[in-house]
Image (tube, helix red, strand yellow):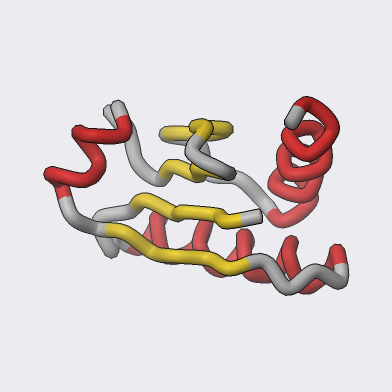
Length: 82
């Protein structure tokens, strides 16, 4: 599973990124995570609000200040659907 995190580098984006890493660690997984701050790439993915999380090329969250527990649920639900 490949996870892409889209953020501008602002405080809120960095907090959610840290929560994402915490969620992955809590799940005992070793998913590859890429932090993307390039506006052009965000537009290509259809990201209109940050922070955003993309799993296997599917947007699962954008514009939300999620906690690790919320992210874990999103990851688990996304894995079931894929």
